[in-house]
Length: 52
Image (cartoon, rainbow, N blue to C red; front, side, top):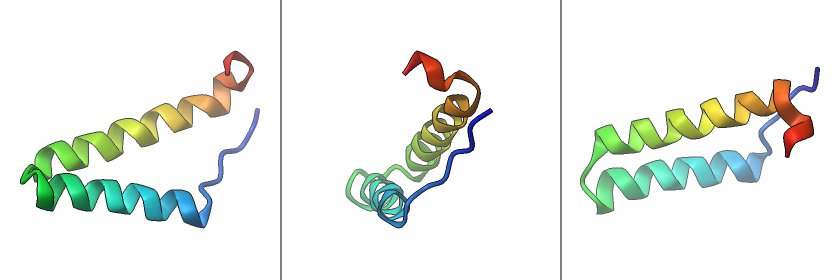
């Protein structure tokens, strides 16, 4: 099983994505959902890394 680690840059990107959706698009709920879904898909890489 592989282990996923977010780089500092990736964390900054996710933070900026969340901020943009929250502030610029005025949709905090969509921002949280987007980041949560992204994190969920990244976690899938731990078990299914060979598919990517």
